[in-house]
Length: 310
Image (cartoon, rainbow, N blue to C red; front, side, top):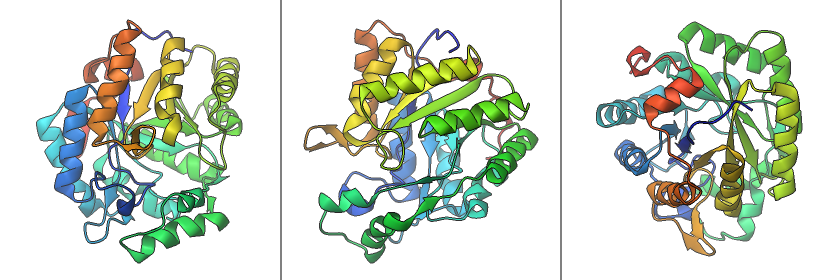
């Protein structure tokens, strides 16, 4: 793992894997998404990982027209690095998922490093009522869902990124994804610093136990050596505990309502900014400095905000 000088906080404020009925604090409209992102940046997030929603019913959408209003507003109000999803939703085609990155050419985009079962249906045990019909269906259908990210898909997205000067947050949900990542590095399709986002606690991927975190770290070290920057994403109740363990070991961290609706046991987070402030307090208690957006750009080798298309 490349030596960390400061910790990058990534925030994912748009809650794409959750449904609006699960929390009244999930942003849905472009104005709400922009405001949530700007507040997260003001709280200390150097990177903003963004999805869009249909404002009529909160359904996840990769329609570029829904991204443009909040991308423009965020860029006007903040110097945070914008990270646009190519994951979108497991229910979308790869072609649909790639549209916003193709058009807006961001500094950074997410890239899922393998196909997997993606089990959201356990949320139905906790949440019984929903505002929109699509929400229950969205969760129930994940019982029979493969989140498709084939080698051809990954290569296509990598080549798109190269053409646009976009680099990637490589989302690794399991050990096999690290092996896939190392394959593309060895083939020369990924150059420079590799930004690894280790994702824990999604059913179908690696678990959320500290031993799972250690296993991912050992494997990444063995496969990637000092070529990577490491970040921790814990889903649900795993968010703060795993981010804290990772930070103590030298990782960067990711929080936000996309990954967890909670700030404590049984307590919904009022905003993604609240989660940013919480993990920032943890970092400061560990005597770890928080990276600015420009420091994050330097660590990750990004092209700069002047070279995006929004």
